[in-house]
Image (cartoon, rainbow, N blue to C red; front, side, top):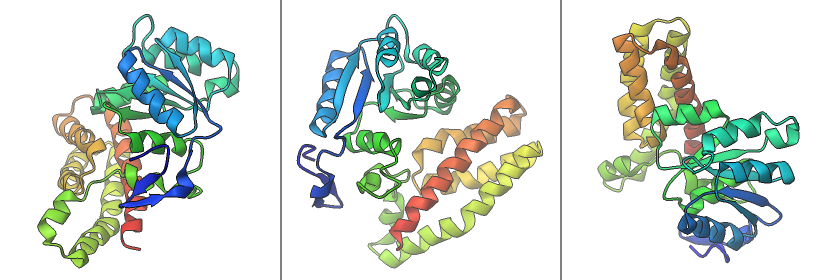
Length: 268
């Protein structure tokens, strides 16, 4: 994809998305120079003004100096890591500064790590190595432009992967749409049962519903909660770390809801 010219969506160039980050100022907190340059190039090519911080302490000082549209925060950095920097930003007295969107940059994306990032106050995460379309889409999602339909980048940052469904479809588009509709029609009820069981501390039912959802989540390629739903099932079954389950279930509910919104576009 040529970022400075257009975004490629479903094999077509969309010229109206040129310079999609124009007018935005983004802070990149990253200590590895190669990663700095890679992210800086993507952002600048798409019109953003970029400020680099080499550690969490520098990021904190930069946030105090000016208003950024968002911060891309590496988690592991010297002097002050991304977790501590995020916590200190969230504690700033100025609400305009403390509420800035912070997106974690990390190679550690298992459920325990994601919970840690959320507790620190991070809004989202991007897995390393960073994929350009995912980076742009995530930034735009925190400036409201994806919701307004301005960029059309959502197709490049799908929460699901239909590769398995396609592989068994034999090229039958009707079958693929049938499976998508089945997911949309049945899974919300299953998730609701999971939510209610967790609220009622019915751990046997939580384990049962998590087990039921697990295979469906895998079939639809929803990787971001692959480990999460397994953690729910395991903790409920073993009756350990039960205090973690409500937050894990909340993640499942949120991701599934977002997936269904995206999947509706597949069958329109």
